[in-house]
Image 1 (cartoon, rainbow, N blue to C red):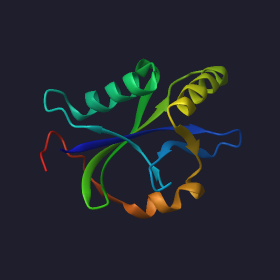
Image 2 (image 1 turned 90 degrees about the vertical axis):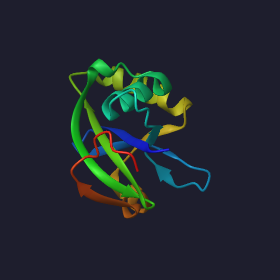
Image 3 (image 1 turned 60 degrees about the horizontal axis):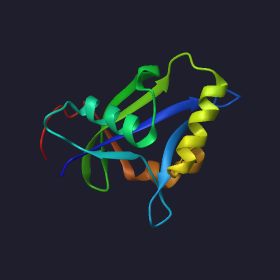
Image 4 (image 1 turned 180 degrees about the vertical axis):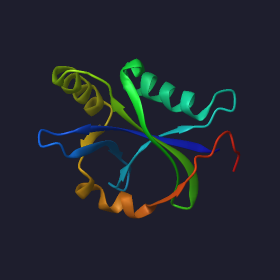
Length: 130
């Protein structure tokens, strides 16, 4: 089954980006993945995963980037979100919720192995099987 990937980007105190990731059984970082339900758009699928799995109020998110990527030879649409205007307290609250689900924010320098496995292709895959 085709998957869709997503992450949320936040900026630390110095303005550097951090990305929401989790670890797999091999202790490697990975993005949030969800199955592609053909009854919904890819965007609706990833927003639903954020809302249901991670309890995110998706109305606070802003789509920052949408790309096609290939991860471990699988083609995926990758959605990168940022929060709109939310307080540090809100982000701290979500960070605690994410940790209970095994997710955390990490700087790109900590994600080198994940980034090596991602090949960015550009145009997103819209409702395309395969």
